[in-house]
Image (cartoon, rainbow, N blue to C red; front, side, top):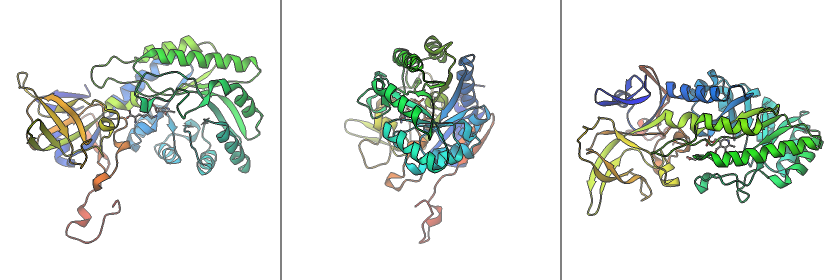
Amino acid sequence: MSHFHYENGEFYAEGVPVSRIAAEVGTPFYCYSTAKLTDNFTNFDAALGGLNAKLYFSCKANSNQAVIRTLAQLGAGADVVSVGEMYRALKAGIPAGEIVFAGVGKTRTEMAEALKAGIYQFNVESPGELRALNEVALSLGKRAPVALRINPDVDAKTHAKISTGKSENKFGIDIDHAPAIYAEAASLPGIDVKGLACHIGSQLTDIAPYRHAFQKMSDLVKALRGKGHSVERVDLGGGIGITYRDEQTISFSDYTNAVAENFGNMGLKLEAEPGRAIVGNAGILVARVINVKEGVSRNFVIVDAAMNDLIRPTLYDAYHQIQPVRQPADDAPVTKVDVVGPICETGDQFAEQRPLPPLVADDLVVFREAGAYGAVMSSTYNTRPLLPEVLVKGDKFEVVRPRQTYDAIIGQDRLPAWL
Ligand SMILES: Cc1ncc(COP(=O)(O)O)c(C=O)c1O
Ligand SMILES: N[C@@H](CCCC[NH3+])C(=O)O
């Protein structure tokens, strides 16, 4: 069954018409496809077959419990960046021994919580963090399993706000300093140094930067081993881009070929931390047109979702395909409109001068590829309630996160807990 598609003149998520979900749940809402999540995960996992590699789903991309649980049941570990994400991963059924904790600013409290839980690995990003982790581990009578996150100084050729592998970025240990810091890590009694990690950025569509970074990392492994250090593991990070519009991106097999070329036959345990490539195209945002406003120079389609619900267009100038839920006729006229939300900012805009078939008030529209960095980046700006999330499986759907509503205050003088 295809995941998101038109059938009988309307838009479906697997076997469920999106209009049916809208009628029961109200709009706007996020909707995820179990089948698409499963396909993405199993295809990536299969491509890595034979490389002694494990996938750690990057929970920052989508930390809905039902999404993490679906992936956990397929054998995913978790990449987390806060103790909150660690708790979510644990609650969704990922064992502590399959959790990697990344991030440039872990607090001592977070270190202690993760040590007590017994996670698989801390990706350490600076000498200061290494020494703090050593102290926290010793105070708990433990040794922290560590990979040093290296900044390989490679341009990922992605949006500047999500590029992480250049020397001017805040992430990782400069590759030239790595040998000295690895030696220090190996000497600290509270640290059990296992290997290296790197992550050069997100939404990469060109394999060349990966090749470049992997080669530098592979050379570093050899150099460290040459100095007598044990290097058992390399964490390759995440970052594989998806198609939002019509861009060519990196296939799982291109990626795994680059991995094999650089790390094959080195006796390493490899880790990958994909987020977007697993959930990005497994999710949509569904909204309803509130009003169509004809301006002097432009026409505006005003929908009930806004920048607080999906911030990517205004934050990164990101493109999300917009499709009417009622399938337009092949010969429907197309006009250019701005698709905007109700928030009091000009930046509350999903698309500028986008060619779309005619839309009128009450029509439903779908924003595609909204499964990654959608719901997780939403806020309650303008005191707009957070959206419900729905998981579809075959011809059934389940609300996996309820809507925050104002129901409790209608006609009353008390506020719901979320306010
Ligand atoms: C350390 C780390 N790992 C994994 C990811 C997941 O990235 P992506 O969603 O691009 O696969 C990120 C985010 O870019 C990250 O910072
Ligand atoms: N939030 C970004 C991706 C950030 C990746 C985080 N390491 C996006 O929506 O594209």
